[in-house]
Length: 372
Image (cartoon, rainbow, N blue to C red; front, side, top):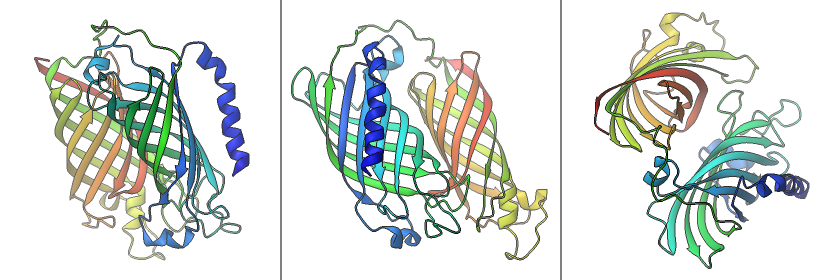
């Protein structure tokens, strides 16, 4: 445990030059003990102890230069370095993560106490993974490199012009998004208290200087295609391709929020394999057992050109009628909107919290009826 904690501290030390070059203006520290959330009974026997985490964040207070800074109450953005034990030193080990993050208040920053939320998405290195010979009981983590997702709800209490106290509740998820099985993932929850130090004030703009990322239309159509890979149980190392195409209609409630509906078409080789009648059947992958389509509702929250997304759908058609993962699917991810209306798409498809595959792709948006 302490070996990896020392590695994390050394990494922060090497970043001191970046901080001194005015890339960041603040630093925060968090640490504490929490609990592993048993999202499935299969993971219960793995949990032997309370997890512990230590975290340092280096960040910058937004200046108001961009219009989305004002719309989102001047959020903070930066890098998160996180060390975490996972509840079983022998089987699960620990993880070290690096992730960019956004932390935004739910109201304006004039108040002494601010209620805020942090979102981080990056990479985590897990020290222990599943191994059929040496660590076959680790059914939570199948690879060393994993996705790191963090949500934190916090109350920022101003102690002075430079110091703040942050009571908080932190949720962390680590998994490989079913790139390799087994992949039950680890979910942890930490109540803790953090400390923030602002070592330099950032320049503030009373009025935005750049509004190029503004949405100009009341209605939007997004067309996108994406691809990914996954595996199925039992673990064999075989990868299966997954392709998707979607059409979304969005109604822009405001510059920072969109709601809508859409449709998806999927061609997933793993779905064909899971639709086989038994583990011993030889499955031929065809359109009938690999294709499915669905209808969905969509929500997006915009931070300038970066847009986190949440979609909830229901399968409405599969040629052979077999849906081994149930009738509902979900998509959690992020899109980046370029100036020419081309969209980069990155997301995780799940079935009620069970990861199915991660996907990356490209799209294009059309807008009409200018009003925003």
